[in-house]
Length: 117
Image (cartoon, rainbow, N blue to C red; front, side, top):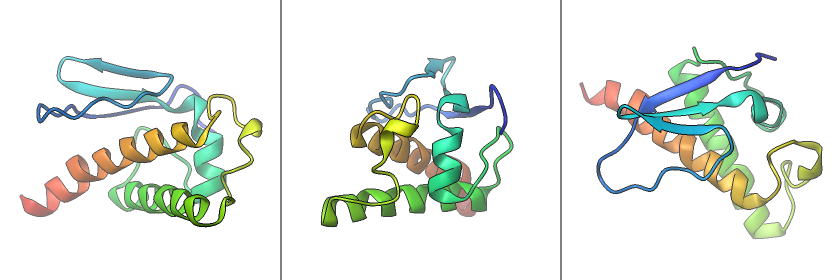
């Protein structure tokens, strides 16, 4: 895994609240998340090793698999990501939701923004 990986995206001025995640920073119009606390969880749940150089396809994969995990959990009460005690800063499904929301924002700014240009 990659230690101290940092993923960045432009912050939004449309009133969105920043994610409530350990390792999150907002500075100079940019949202930044240190991934070292989440990379094992993300890799095990999504199959993607996250780095600061994550591709658009990998971003979409992480986003969709995290959202799928949340949907399964809401529907059945269990999923790949419900054994949270194994992961340092992932202490609740709320954290998984915030992580999913951050990746949704990344897809919107990095992937969908490219497609509309």
